[in-house]
Structures are given as C-alpha cells and as structure tokens.
Length: 237
Image (cartoon, rainbow, N blue to C red; front, top):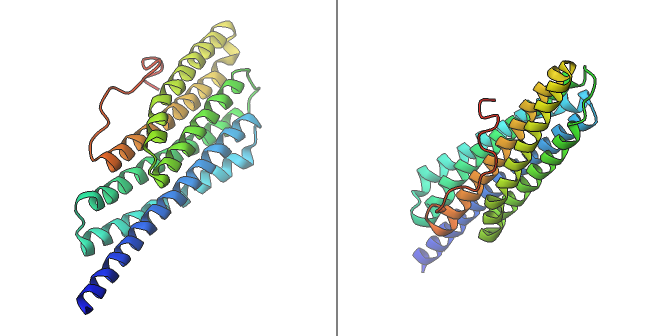
C-alpha cells in the first residue's frame, strides 16, 4: 500500500513539474507576443520611448529561457523521462528557443523604429503594421495551440505562414518602387526592408513552433514542404 501511495505521489509530482514547464513557456510566449505588438506600434506611432521599452524588455524573455533550461535539466536528471514525457521536454526546449528568437526580432524592429523616427515618414509604414499584426496573430494562435495541445490550430498556423511571405514580397516590391521614384526615400525604405524581414522571420519561428506541436502530439515530423510565398525576395537581408 505504501509503495502504491509513493508511486502515485511520484507521478503527481512529475505531472506538476511538467505543468510548471508548460506554464513557464506560456508566460514567456505572452511576453514575447507583447514585445512584438509594442514594437509594431512603435513603428506605426513613431514612439521612440516605446521602442526603448521593447529593447530593454528583451532581457525578461532571456530570463524565461534560462529558467526553462533549468527546469528541463532538472526533469532530465531526476525523472529520466521516456516516450511522450521526453517529447514534452524536448519540445519545450525547442519552443523556448523559437520564442526567444521572436523576441529578438521584435527588439530588432524596435531598434530600426528608433532610427526611422528621426527621418520623415514614408507611406509603406502602413503595410508594415498590417504584416506585423498578422505575425502577432499567428504567434498568439500557435502559443494557444501549444497550451491547448490543439493540432488543428497548429497546422492552420503552419499553412498561414504563406500569407506572411506574400505580404513580405508585396511590401518588398513597393519599397523598391518608392526608392526608384525618389532617392530621398532610400534611407527610410532600407530600414523598413529590414523591419519587414524581421517580421517575416517571426512568421517562420511561429511555423517552427507549429511543427514542434505536431511532433509532440503525433510523435512524428510534419510531412510536406512548408507553404511559402515570395521566398526569394530579400533573401539576403
């Protein structure tokens, strides 16, 4: 009887630790998503103070990633997980890395915004805001899919990355046109190109998370080529 109680206690304790890991991932994702929203807003509203808060806030996401690494190491050392439990831990580690990169790209957007705020605005900023909102929507959806273990929602995000790519391609061509029409637009448009590329990369990391969710739930990689839009444009940015 004592052995059964001890085993039940161990299982409950293990489940609680896994639950804490998922919760930490969710909190980290929430901060990264807020960072992205603020970065896009700082571009649209030419708000340098908001840009500075995004840049300084990146450290909080790094702290979350460090905490997740500690939780993962503890689980691996003490629990020696196998099968689905091991997938839970491996996927948590991978998703935390993708979230950290999303926050890094948001900080990059904020840094470019601070420069843009010092020069006259150009029209394509509106398109940047639309693209940013889509990336934020996909980020939120895929994080919800992870917490809910919702495979359908994750696959929907995976498919919709193509929308981000198409927006990026359209915006890239628009920026090139603006630069050709008036050389005075070159500086602003160049920074906007880098901002757009950062947002496009955020979409890629949301797609990475969707693929990790598929592996977590199904125990196998998501088969098939990623849906991509204008994948050649701006590849070197």
